Length: 290
Image (cartoon, rainbow, N blue to C red; front, side, top):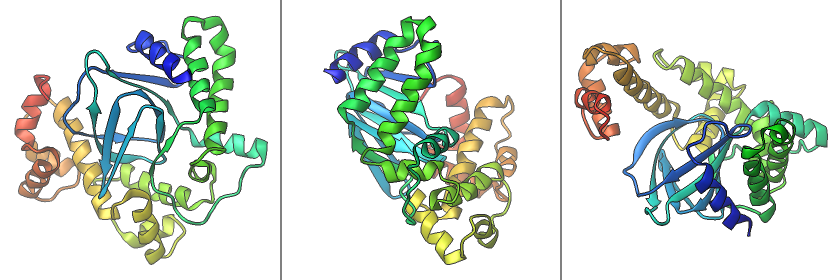
């Protein structure tokens, strides 16, 4: 029953900008081509249809009644694989804030974790209680007087359902400052913030408070990539944003700006990532094609 109402509410409210809390809604009427993007820590629940995303050498597919969790900033390639005008893809999501998870763990005393670094992306079946919480959060959309008080409480309940659910160990690591996921997360944030700089594994391992061998192992367990591969994905994503926002056509300058020393290498890796040379992609992005 909760899934049926969730479909109805998403259909009704998709496209609105005044949703309660950090709620996000998605409605797609047709399958899409794979598209590369960056995503931060997020929870995504599917009410109808299916979506597939990939990162590194891993692929994840999730559909109606399932949820996906991303625990750290990740470059992903995703597309909707099951959607139609009569049965569009319908999904709801929440941004996962480490500080909110940490506060709930401290409040409840639920701080037990495991030393192993979990994968940055996981998929599980949504419990009836989790779906019901999303339904109640969406109901607040048309009740602004209630949602100021109730939305934070329901978001807190959603976090609790995650912490006590199938991916509880992974969710707890997001909020624990001394978890292996948090240690790797510090290195990931450094790469994101300094993607144009040369990368030294020894410095990243020191930042993560790990030996170099342990850092390599944990980083790959989380991201399905090496630090160098992760940096390359970030550089190319940043380059695409620059191509979209800049008015000039100096592709080589953009390559240098994100850390490439060779314009030909930048063009080659960009085409391998996005399927089209940067100059052509720039023109396509500005005309709204693709």
